[in-house]
Figure 1 (spheres, rainbow over the protein chains, first blue to last red):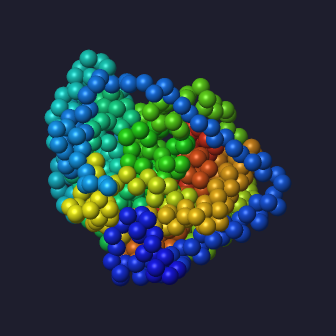
Figure 2 (cartoon, each protein chain N blue to C red):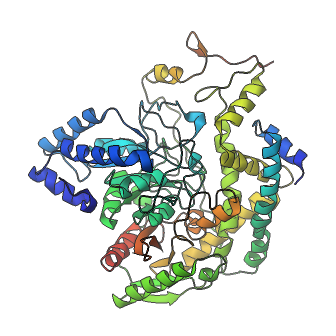
Figure 3 (tube, each protein chain N blue to C red):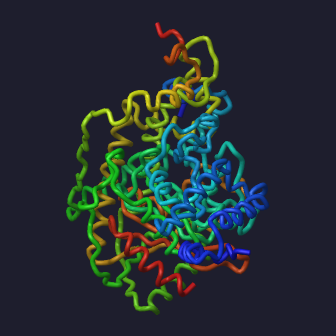
Length: 96
Length: 471
């Protein structure tokens, strides 16, 4: 992996990183990616196995979008955790 | 003096019932051990300041005859479980001062049972690690040998019980984080079926793999704690309603051994020898052991180290310095994000987020993530088909004995190999348990790993109890 690729990933993931860590991660990535690359080999073994019925047991679970607590029951606690607030609102840096 | 070393939940329950001692006496006995042992072991990050109120509630339940087995039982809680108005930091700097605004489902269950929540235990940051060395709050030492790691990520939860600083504890297990540390400290650790225990209020690592489970000195203790937290919860959409769970059926007393898988590289000779002895013990008490073939299981670790970081990168996007947790001041919005996450996350967490970002990025998504998801369903199908002929599958829990500090932390791949035997269970969503299977002559513990079909925790407990008598 090139250092620029790792830098780009760090930007995408919104993580400030030092040059030295980026170099270290590039090295780790080569080892990790070559290990997990085994899954390509797995695909070959799997397509050769006719006995394995595909298991797709995934489905969505929905519930009503209903209010279940008293209005404002958690507000104070949640606002207290916010780094910056004004008049009970979360305050963030200018976006545009 | 209460004999904490040999205390079990049922013994404590009987003593409390008889009035040999009160809940307050019992809690005091544990606090005394913690006061002496914790500065060195570092099992707990914090002891809760509301123990008096908790004791009052438990005493009242006992007096009014409303006590359950868990009433008044001192329990340690992993730092990634929300306890209302207490800090839950997941072993990370980014949540150093974060106070939970509600109770996790498992905490609600324990509170209504009148259990005593002693405090929160140390863990690998966001549960990413196998040694508890990635915690932002220092290393936890293995009470059986303080030069060695307690395993991870639930290292604090096992150390708390192993040093007799709690009777039982809760851990979470994404790839082995309950079972491997239980094995490293000579304890029983249960990872229940995916969907058995609600994760509402648990700080997520990899949501398709995470599960909460129990840790104790005996199989029965782990079983009692599991029963207290087991149940359906509509706040976790993966929670399975009771009527949809597979019902117990009689055991055939037949256990499968994946011979080929045990020939994987990097397994200690002593671990294999101990496993051989465990097999002989089980045969002696009437279990039939059969060789089984699981040709795909060897890909589990590779599949895991694709799916897990992918989910990590998306789950941890929420820590952005905006709504809670650490927030580093900067003039631009982007810089607040990047500086907060750079300063708040530790090295291993940063590495896994980047890995996940890469795996999910355009051009690599198909080659890694999609391929891993397909392999996962094939591995699951293969395991499930084997269960039509055996009750359970056994392997060692960890390929190595408890290792020393700094032995593996610099080499991520070597650390990841710790999960070799435990990961297939999370991949397939089935339950598994590690139980002590003896010690080396230097006193380092081995663990036997038992896997069962989905919702058949009863099989794990039955085999575990049979085996426990022999060790």
